[in-house]
Length: 395
Image (cartoon, rainbow, N blue to C red; front, side):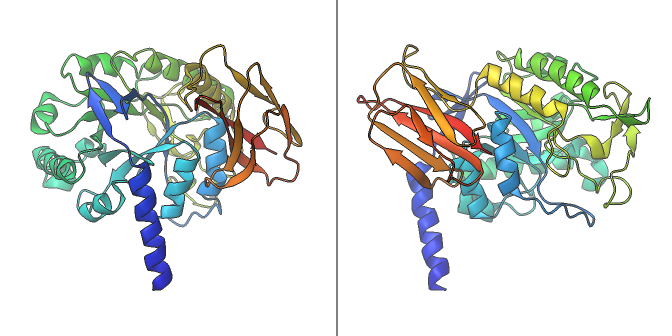
């Protein structure tokens, strides 16, 4: 009991020190007065219907960071503090799904955790009026009540909803407390057009909460990762080009889920017809940018390149002439630091925020051969207190 109380106290102190003010203004999302753009992915936690891959967030975080993903969107609330801490240490924020029937306790307990980006209710609930007495207005009434309650409990985080396609005027009028409208949009490769459609109806902030393509080609009856990567490139780029109207995207999805169609111990090609490139069919178990065994598909590298180009990961607070390059990345033994200026301190932490190396000297290389494989974060601070962070992976 004493150990539990001590851990809880540490969590409360940690949260108080690192909590942030996150708000929406003029369609933009801000974290402590700095604009935040969502380079995201949908992250379905846990397995369903008997599937058990044996992998966890400890396996996933290095891949998420390698793909330059700064935000995950969940489908259920994360209750493990160690998991929240790990995502925060890796520089990944969370769009946290809340259960509309049981959420007050969670918000009260975790509202100060720095991993939280915003709260979200519902995932395409508007497609299921049968869940609400065959009257979708009942859902919109409940959504508004939930959003208003959360905002009263936690004024420092916005509230969103993952709506199926563009919200109707009925939805918009019924839910004034929703700060950000997420949209799950599957329009072949033209999901971005939904942003214009919604922007014409409301001045609220907008993001694409689901869009993407699976890696199974029903036309050939076999997997085709090249087609998935090609569609992903078009979809992501077109959405990110709408940065004046949208705060970003959480691509669907991180990992293949074998439980969705047929035998949970086999990868089945089952699904349903939909406007999905390039076969007009949603093959439910092939949506991941990594396989169930966490092997990156071609789309993984497409995501990595696009998100790296828009550079929405760690911020560089140094002047442009004071750049730092680290290589090779991933690294096996010697990590090289290439910089043209003098710095006063260097620090390396693992994904849990634990310091594994520090040095006050201006050095150009570090022997990391004795470090465990995984993701690390290098931080350099100059004499004026300016800092830069770089992510790297040790094989």
